[in-house]
Each structure stands twice: as structure tokens, then as C-alpha cells.
Image (tube, rainbow, N blue to C red):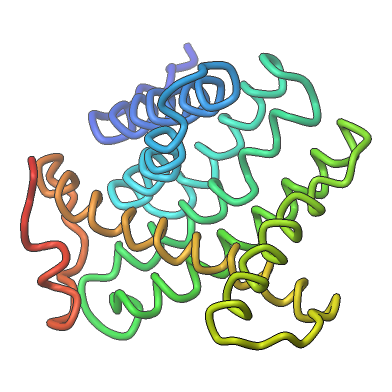
Length: 220
């Protein structure tokens, strides 16, 4: 008689965590697209379930969770909008989980996870802008460059400079705006994970002394 392979307790928990946390990520992505309120909170929460999955079970399980999330969203939202969750939220979750899983050493440095994470998030934002521009048939990057041009004009007015603004300066200012926004978002992700994950028995590394004051006041 052939014996059936049974899952042990650890494997069953890993399977359950992968299913639930992948589904939670997919629900957050759907809510981000279709609910008129709560967009900043959804953006902040999106990378956390898969990062938590990687903290608990390792990078292989996190990659499986990201694949499950993408397949679920393809079924719910179509083959273009669904996989966009990978850029940047899926990749950012994998990066943060990889760094946070290290309890010591260079990988556990907040400066590394924060700095590279902000670049991943900014690059993913640009990918989403490009894809959505194709979908809507309009160059959405123009909206960002318009905001950057307005900012540069205000700065020039404050400084008493009447020089004309060149296109290259506007493009650099737009990229800087995107990067600064993502620097703030990724730092906020670190703070939220530092507050929440210890309560889920998956703490992340301690922040450096220079950043401790920003995250020491736990609102939870």
C-alpha cells in the first residue's frame, strides 16, 4: 500500500501563512485601486505581509507568496494591473524581509535597507507610471514634471533668481521628488514594522541611535 505524505506542524503553518499573507497583500492591492479613501494607509501596509512571511519562513516562502499574490490578482484584475503589485511593493517586501531577517551584521543595518529600499520603491514607481501611461493613452510623467517645474519656479522666486528653467533641471527635480517621497515612505515602513512585528513574534533589527528617536514613541 502506498503511504500518503502528511504535513508536519511546521509545514502546515508555513502553507497557511503563505496563503493568508498572500491573500492579505492581494486584498490591499485591490483596495488601493478601487476604494476612494485610505490610499496612503494601503500603500504603507502593502509590503508588510510578504515581509512578515519572509521573516517567519525565509525567502523561498516569500517568493512563493509573491507568485501566489500575482496569480490571484491576475484572476481578479487582469494580466496587466494584477502583476503591477510586484513594482515596487513585491520587490520592496522581498528586500526588506531579506534585510530584517538578519539579526546582526551588515544586512541588519537600517541604513542599507532604507537606502536601497527607497531606490527600489522609486524605480517601481517609475515602472508603474510607464505602464499606466500606456493603459490610459496619456503621458502621466508630465503631471510629475509639471509639479517639479512649479516647485523650481517657486524656489527661483524665493531666491530672487530670474533665470529660465531648463528641461534637464525639471526632469532631475521630478526624479528627486519621486525619490524623496519614497525615502519617507520606506522609513515609515521601518517604523511601522518596528512597532508591529514584535507583537507578532517576528521582530526586526534595532534602529541606529540616530534614528531611534524617530521610532521610539510607539503609538500602538
